[in-house]
Image (cartoon, rainbow, N blue to C red):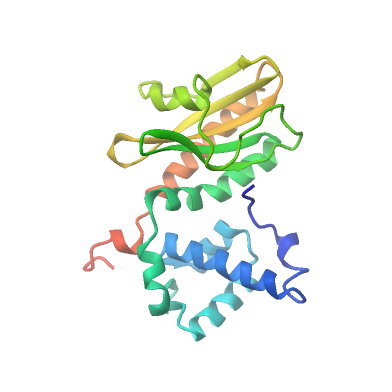
Length: 232
């Protein structure tokens, strides 16, 4: 299950666990590749890694040409340009959405899912566990979105601007809220929150809607490859 990094996860282990340091560095490189040109503050906010740790890792990555610095902005270095060129729209969506989804899950205790259409199939790109285990299986990245569920309806009812609520319709012991995130070409992604019970709390609607808007705003920020050279 995908999970965002917490300060507590990183700080005590980077001193004695080499795998943790390497894993954190790769997480940081992933965000540099998707968000570039990226500021240090944006990388720290997106990853949840403390500013001093981000600064130290960036300095080390610059030394091996994995990252390059242009003033206050960071981009992938020459040794990783091939990696950056392979960033797909689905991959970028997942990375951009990861932090807002984690904060939504932490604030509400709900399970959170991100879905999109891959080819002709609706699948979950990322999921986060609820604070209390949910009575549902197959909510994992790569699994198909269940027909008739709120996220499935969200991909079909594109004229519906507000949250789509499933108040125990699919399962009487589970309710969910789904909002759409506009993508290029008229497609949408969907952010879904799931909680036990036959009716979601009112606050869950606003929190889910706000997270969808936050992800949408992040997707509007162009990467270095999308900005004309004369503007950079």
